[in-house]
Image (cartoon, rainbow, N blue to C red):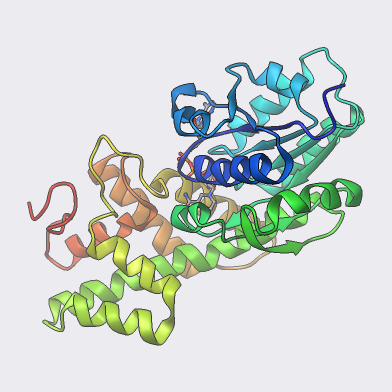
Length: 316
Ligand SMILES: NC(=O)c1ccc[n+]([C@@H]2O[C@H](COP(=O)([O-])OP(=O)(O)OC[C@H]3O[C@@H](n4cnc5c(N)ncnc54)[C@H](OP(=O)(O)O)[C@@H]3O)[C@@H](O)[C@H]2O)c1
């Protein structure tokens, strides 16, 4: 068995790198431990290694070395393949705890939990609310579901380390995943509304500056930050950058919500509009887009260019 508190991390994207950095800083300063990390592109971990974390290119070996393993990856297929790798290692997984923070379908987490249970390991679904700057600040909101003992074991590594608040969803691992997907109905729809209002402000001559001031002061910092993604051009960043929240991930989130809504006979017309505008943005401008890129499509519908002056093809 590895030492009781060896902690591992897989997934160093926009969110994962920021979260793992906060965890490493905590482990090092409070417990004298260093995080063991892995990622498909292992070089993404250079800033983590610089603060003492230990690279482990093989996920299988990382699982062997650690008693608690966090994962933060793009989608359901990537999580499934990590679970298969962990299961196929041939090593005992007894008493290990796997904590997935990605946004995935409740059925995906239920399958993962059942597979780990067969090996006497625990699986928690712990998706997060908040964008990458919130992750960097350690202020995410977590939802957590799964076996109680495992939940209590990992909470101290989350609360005031990577997150400011934990919503405990109890034993049912599907519930935290479902809550995340429900939250994304709000997130994606709000992004659409902020985009629509900013196109309205620009076309009527009101101006995006005062509109952003109003959105921030009257409606709050979250929609205010969504407005900034538009006015600073982050909705369509340079091709050599990693978008804050990749449009394809947001489309995945919307699709999960729409599929679950259909099964429950619920209509989500606002979300459908936002989803279709994100798909149209991706068709027009490719993969390197933020979830807010429906704004470019709304601009085109109003007779303007997809690009505003701060975006990657400023003004063209
Ligand atoms: N960004 C946000 O604002 C936000 C907020 C809340 C929740 N989320 C959710 O959090 C999760 C991560 O989001 P993110 O923005 O950090 O995504 P991201 O920047 O695209 O990073 C995705 C991570 O998954 C890895 N990955 C992708 N495809 C893989 C494959 N085929 N095999 C192995 N690894 C693979 C990537 O490795 P490489 O580094 O090698 O590409 C990277 O570590 C997603 O489920 C997303 O929906 C995102």
